[in-house]
Length: 273
Image 1 (spheres, rainbow, N blue to C red):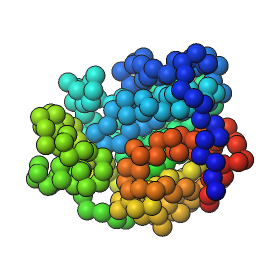
Image 2 (image 1 turned 90 degrees about the vertical axis):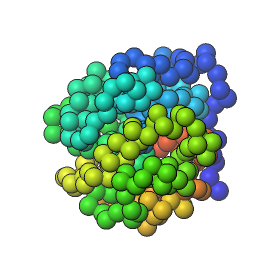
Image 3 (image 1 turned 180 degrees about the vertical axis):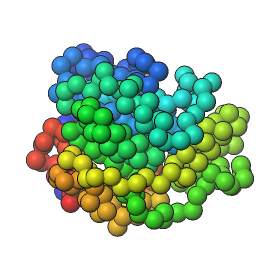
């Protein structure tokens, strides 16, 4: 049985920096650590903002510094127009993240955020810029694999919101409130961005890769994870969690432990192949 608490310290704020995830640039929110061994860049799913990862900061050990990516159109950037094409978004992030890429870095992304993390890694390599030393890709099929669920972005509002609730990423109370009417344009734009984007398989990256998913995820069935193996020449592992597409909401502590142990190399928490 896995040890799910091997590297999770008790929440604190004085042992290596701050647990507060604060905006440093338009694109980067960071929970600073004094002397981190790793920087973990987190790319949120469609419609989500950097604060989605705020609860991760106190769960991570002091050796890992969390940086969450904030895209236009959400939270403190709600007045900005979201990206409508992936290529210009990737080009923008190549420049926006360059000052933070020194040292050992890892990319984690969920759903559309996983596609973004993978394509940004490809773009950094092409640009001759240091990329991540590890890729952790969650809730997303590999490039070139057929879709396993119908597109949502073209549905009428009521059906679109109902599907979001069914997936588990939106609470029913939020779906029925005024806030949802404010969020709908960004949510729909993000789903359109990723559902209309077909990532082209590039050359395999020489980066260790971990594919993650919920056991009951209708958008990323467990048997689709193995296809990510073809996109790396380094080690490949996969890990399933209890839950559906948004397993990471209910399994944050377990997921953060798996990520921390993957980066720091704790042999007591083996990520299953």
